[in-house]
Image (cartoon, rainbow, N blue to C red; front, side, top):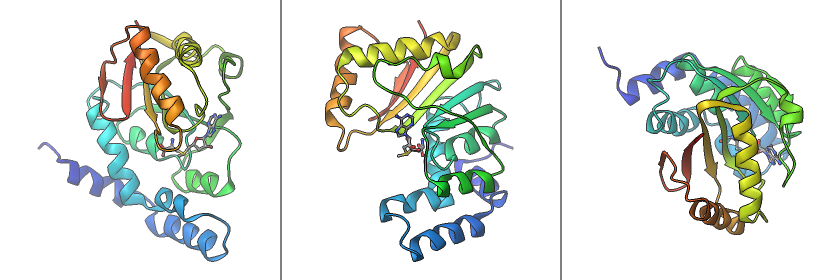
Length: 208
Ligand SMILES: C[S@@+](CC[C@H](N)C(=O)[O-])C[C@H]1O[C@@H](n2cnc3c(N)ncnc32)[C@H](O)[C@@H]1O
């Protein structure tokens, strides 16, 4: 029997400690330890639906199991959703708030290492020799003042850590970081780079 999108959401939710995650948010919210904008990361159904949409859109629900590096993992919802489909996901983030770490723990995962992306700085030193089938970086905001050359550096650098034929999944915030977003589009044009697939702001690039 083929499961529908809603069936899968239900199944993942049934395996998720929803009450604990909502209680975690309530604790932080009630004590004024966080900003309202973070609430969405502690809403399991909303997160699972969003991430599942990307997983489906980019063919990750039917691909063979992949070794994935997730940059800027936040509360861990993309890795969590990918794991449901058998992918082996390695979580990384810049030093981040404890509430994300607690959510990751509740989801039964842990961060593997700290990785901060900086303009024109290679990530390879931190990553080491491991190669990945897919590197993902979603909801990212480290590109505020990037010019196309900075995108070229970052994408080439990621491709060095990706196996031949592997992929880079980028979801680029374009609110408040318009300069970096537009320079990404300019980079694609300048490099004559045709993304494999994209929706409005999510792009899958194939390593050429
Ligand atoms: C909007 S959250 C997105 C979380 C998650 N990727 C998602 O799609 O739900 C942005 C994440 O980027 C991380 N981040 C911010 N600056 C970063 C940097 N320079 N390098 C790596 N991660 C960074 C933050 O710590 C945070 O976890």
